[in-house]
Length: 87
Image (cartoon, rainbow, N blue to C red; front, side):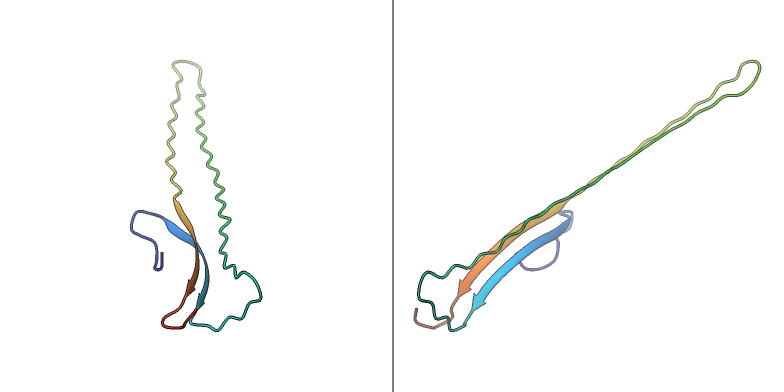
């Protein structure tokens, strides 16, 4: 999960909770959590207007096109890591 966005895969929205090589004293269960509450909101509007004014053979044309893409990668990592300590 570390690093930036992968090409073509949008932005990453990551949450990390890490305890690494730390002395932890706990009288009960130890819980490490990472919550990612990702939300994406998007709105797109498109309007085309054509108006013809005249006395004879008046005409009008309008064309419109819209293309939209939203891409977000989300994740959460909770980690308790020890590199040599005795648990």
